[in-house]
Amino acid sequence: MARILGFHYPERIIRLLFLRGENKECRILDIGGGTGLLAQEMIARNPGPHLEFTVLDPTAEMLKQVPDMENIKKVQGRGEELPFPENSFDRIIVIETLHHTQDPVALFSEAYRVLRRGGIMVVQEPDQDKFLIKLIIGLEKIFIRRIIRVDSQLIEDWASYAGFTGQVIFSHKGQIFWKGKKEE
Image 1: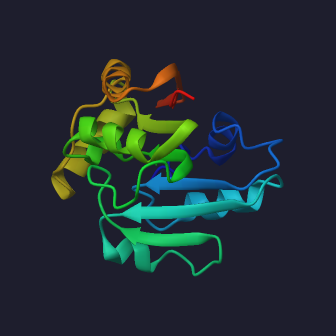
Image 2 (image 1 turned 60 degrees about the vertical axis):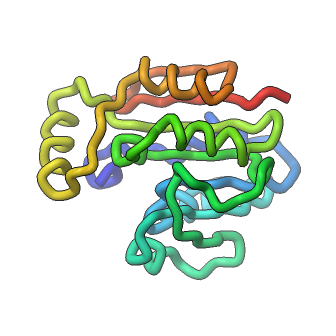
């Protein structure tokens, strides 16, 4: 939906994750990654290090649509109960997923647990105070029903509680972007 409405920003996510200019491999967890579209686009647009994505989604139907690629793994699961050991990933992205989450505090805590020291997490969420977003969220509530309120302050609170530092948050074209870091 984000791509159709013009809220799709793979280049911005790449910049926020500091992927350009690094020469090492980078393991990225895409929580709520759906069909793996963002992972595919980021791999195609990033001439830097080798990226290894794990696309995590609760629905098998979405994961079936993720193409079979050497550097994309598919895992069925929920962000609130990540099936990975501690310190497994260099970067984590959560794109338009928090408002579908039952327990965002658990998601942030789990993300912190599986992120390596010095790792970065980026969240993109629709700004639910914008008129068009309110309309879209209203439609999602009709069809999906599991929609929670998410705003900048809540994201910062959930992230701080989990232990993230160095938080940066801003709004851009109806989207909230948050970036945080796990202490080194």
